[in-house]
Image 1 (tube, one colour):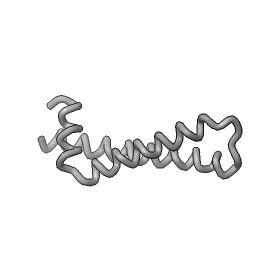
Image 2: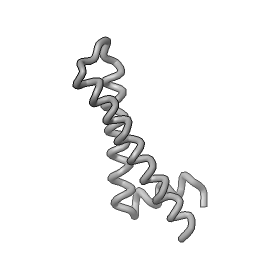
Image 3: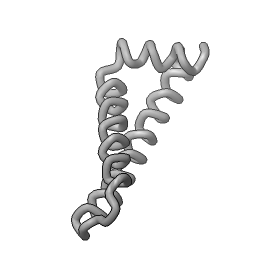
Length: 73
């Protein structure tokens, strides 16, 4: 099964995968908005670091779901 169609199937069938993908996109958008700022407060810098971690955790979890789906497909 192609990678793209597996993602589409998971988006349709797997609630956790769908939620993780939405969260990942939300974190990415917030991160990009912060990157547009010319100067960041300490709180904003902390938030950027936090967003990067959250994004990575969501990505890692999605990758795990993808790997498990490939095995069971």
